[in-house]
Image: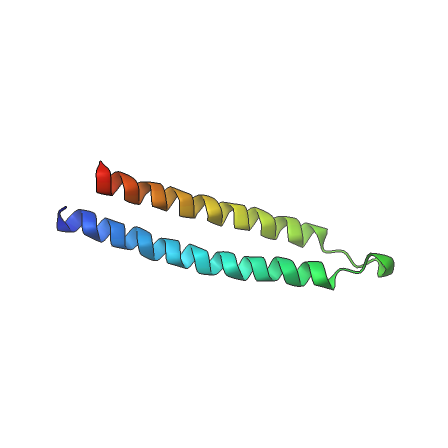
Length: 76
């Protein structure tokens, strides 16, 4: 494996770590929003929760994409 491939793998691994940290923050925000809801008082954060869940799905995709790229670089 040459240095260019190693550098690309290292960069992808750094991106994965960054996305994972973002995903943890988004998960915490989802939990916070859900806990703050009070249907009897008319307090709903459905829009914000939906947007946060969409962001979490995007981050999961980005992580899977980078892992696939790492595999292609290692074995391709």
